[in-house]
Length: 268
Figure 1 (cartoon, rainbow, N blue to C red):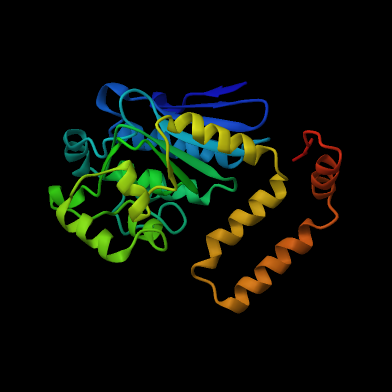
Figure 2: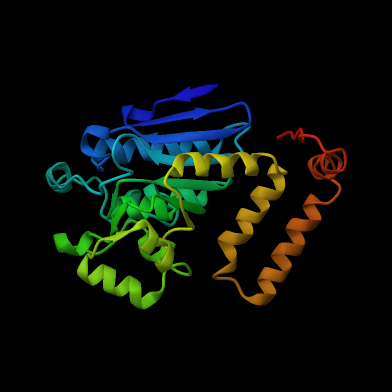
């Protein structure tokens, strides 16, 4: 069992099957985002990106909530002394706040967010970075930024494209109306609802961990391209990925384990 605690705001534990449990642990503040939480999330994403044996990630919050969004008090004080302007691309195509949400989409393995309690503003954008979102039906969610005179700017627009209906997203952004987990599924924020989202997310992650990790990573690369790519580009990209997989040790093991009705043993 691997255990990490980046900057004291986030923990990472990984089991023997390669499923990493990532937890926001500022539970006394409903895991609100202060500078230390931002730094810890970036550190966690960096650690996971190159983690040996990683197969899937479950992202959740400790305590009563997933994440209440920005800690407005701490962020107001730190904003005057921002090291980089928001327009500066400090993390590839993103600034630091955007990377906090985008990094889950950029990770090479599938990420499942398990959301309960409050999930507002930046917290909703972080959850939206996951490949799959399991949300408690009683969770409280909101696109909160307009309440503070701001717009969503932690990659929300990029992450919601293709999943959330445009007119619904506009109404939620303009009004900051709260919605629950059942509505989140209807609108496109949730993949599924479950009263025990961590257990459901972990079960999905375990299923993912029992598949060829090379194929999982290839599929995620394709998913990360297909909304922007042309049909010709998609067809070529999937052919390239498939050709690299066919006949490899892990692909053959996937076939043999199914034929022999046993758990597969994959290698990095």
